[in-house]
Length: 218
Ligand SMILES: [Zn+2]
Ligand SMILES: [Zn+2]
Image (cartoon, rainbow, N blue to C red):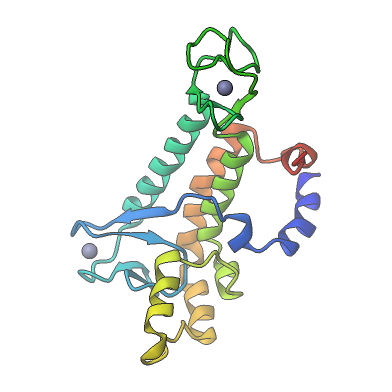
């Protein structure tokens, strides 16, 4: 089945590469601070403690309900992007970005909207593959085993911080023993967040995708 096919792919593509284009999950604390959540890894903006995600600005523990609802809101946003069906022209000089596809099929309607003046071909801006990848990324954020193996997509802002501060004292990551402990302590809570994502996989009917079409870049 689809899961068997997924195994070798997951082992040869890193999350950093695979989820390069995925939108980050921004969490907002009750204090108003918001930050990109990258799972159990080092961040200047949040800490994963033994009992969940803690805001570094005010020290508040974000409630599970808060995290789940913000996660769900992001998922719905991406699903609506996909269903909105925006298309664009492959001719860069044309730049048509529209939702009007039904009449003209794959041929660009051009800037006049009357299918003249452009020989470009239009395609979906937000593809099912991107939506699928986005959901996989969000699911990965709560994958405690990936966190233990330090395989999560690195946080962009923190990478920059590390580079900036490398003349000073070395910023040390979370130790392996702490990672192991945090993974176990948060397994159930994070598993519940993964279920939130999985619910949408099932809803979209994309849990078992046709891998051939997903990875056909021709
Ligand atoms: Zn806060
Ligand atoms: Zn065009």
